[in-house]
Length: 114
Ligand code: 5GP
Ligand code: ZN
Image (cartoon, rainbow, N blue to C red; front, side):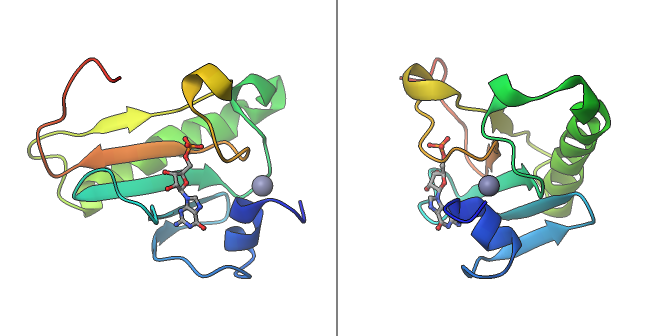
């Protein structure tokens, strides 16, 4: 998708600090970190939000979850824990319409979110 910033990150047209990549997913540091560790895990395939996931994306969904686990371990978040967040739609606070999962850690996180 030409006008999608995360597709452009996948294609290398916009630079990013990648921490993990395979054939299906990409993980990179959030430009405006909300925690000492703040990673975005995305499928390379353009899917605009959680609401747009299809049955055919089942395997990809599992790869994203396992990717989150892999990156959490890689960055040492498995010792003290972490949080995974998906924002969907306007009430959810979604600002980039390419599905992504925030991996947050490196400090004790508050609950509930605002
Ligand atoms: P959302 O608000 O949609 O859940 O999350 C979008 C996230 O993307 C935000 O945390 C924002 O800081 C991050 N972001 C927006 N533009 C860029 C960018 O060009 N590069 C990177 N690395 N992160 C971005
Ligand atoms: Zn996209």
